[in-house]
Length: 318
Image 1 (cartoon, one colour):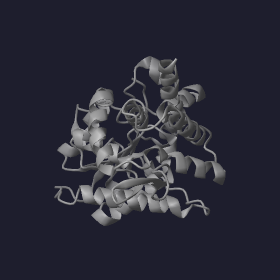
Image 2 (cartoon, rainbow, N blue to C red):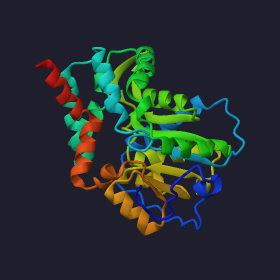
Image 3 (cartoon, rainbow, N blue to C red):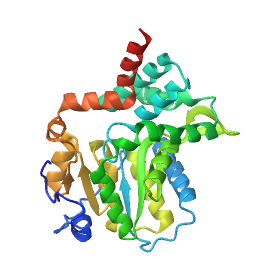
Image 4 (cartoon, helix red, strand yellow):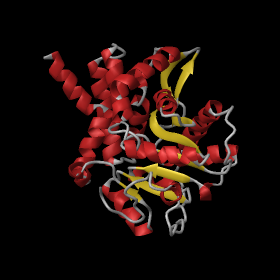
C-alpha cells in the first residue's frame, strides 16, 4: 500500500482515526471559478442534485450536517462504470460496435487531453450518452441491475467500501458523485447500501431517451456544483463533510469540503494531496499503484471510456 500524509493502513481500525485524521489539514481556499464557466456545468450540477433529493426524500439521518461524497470510477470500483455499462448494453444489442467506438474516441480525447476547445467539448457532451437515444428509461434501469451483477459487483474496492460504511456507522449520509449515467450510479449506491447517487442526467421525454444531456456531463466543476446544490438543499456544512476521489479532475469537489481524501490517486492528485496534508489511501496492488504516470493514465482512461471494449469487440467479430 502506497504511503501518504494522513494515510491509515486499515480504515476499520478506528472510526475516529479513519474519518478525522489528526491533525486535520487546514482547508485551502477553493480556486476562483473561471470566468468562462458555462451554464451547462451549473445545470448539470442542479439536475444531479435534484435527482439525489428524490432518492433520499424519506431519509431522516442522525447527523444532518455531515455527509461523504465518493467518486465512483477507480475510487469505489476498479475501472470505469460506463465501460462496464456499455459492454453490457452492447451484449444486449442496445447499440452497434461502430457507435461504441465513435463515442469512445471522443470521450477518450476529451478526458486525456483535457481539451478546452468548444467544438471538442460539445462533441464529447453530445456523444456521452447518445447511444441510449430511443430506448426507454425503465428498460435501461432494469438492465443496469443485471449488468451490475455480471460485471461490476466483484470490482468494488473493499477498502473504499469499508470507508463508506464507517460514515454510515457514524450516522452520516453517503452519496456517489460520478460522470456515469445516474441510472447506473443509483444501482451501485443501492447495492452498497448508500444514501443515494448523483450522476450525468440524460434527457428523456415520455419515458424515452432523446440522446441529449441535461447540462454537461457531471465532470470536474459540475461535480462541485452538484455537491454545493445538494448541501444547500440538505443543510449540510461542507466544512465538516468528506470527499473521496482518485482523479485530479475532481479537485473542485475535493477542495469544497473540510475533509478531502485521495483514493488510488493519479500522480497529480497524489502530489497535491501530499502538498496539502490530505490523507492518501491506495487499495491497488503495488504493481498497479506504481503505474501513475502519463501512460497509465491514458490506458486507464481509454479502458474507462470504451476503447478497450471496442478492441475486444473487434476481435470477437473477426
